[in-house]
Image (cartoon, rainbow over all chains, first blue to last red; front, side, top):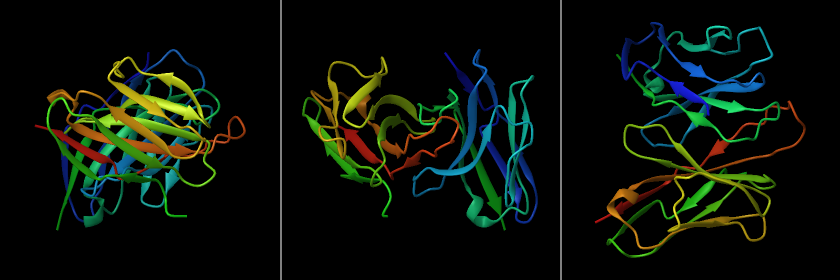
Length: 116
Length: 117
């Protein structure tokens, strides 16, 4: 079974600054996907960024980027130029299999508070 | 496309009553998932369907829980004889499973919050 661990329960950051969220996972699978989801106070889970394990290049989506270290089984998320709207719970998630569409295993989440 | 919709958004019920939640996935999405989330925790997988077939059920899904997707479109999650421990947010999600390696995204609804008193 896969496990996903987020060791930071809560992080705060000043507006316009950068914050990095940690995520480690444990799996024996060789083909998998990793995700970061954002859950604002309205509670709808929104995909932030996705990384395919077979790709060495780190994924980037605008102000969001990841540092994927496959050997270390680490998948951190960096939020640059933080905005007030980034305040939310952030969940790291794992999906096994070469074909996405299988179930997600989530970490416990990190609450991010962006301060003006 | 209006996204994944769930109904009701909030439900308060007395212990021992039955409750049913409905999920309408994004049109043409063939996979539908149910997750449970308690306050301050990450979502936990319950079950998922491909079209009308239920492909996997978590051991979290006790005999009191049943999920259906009779025509491969909307799905219902019923909880019988509710217990206080069932109080949680029930999240529905959907995706389009096509070619391997295509990396299809799983889209979530806003959830149905259940409070058992």
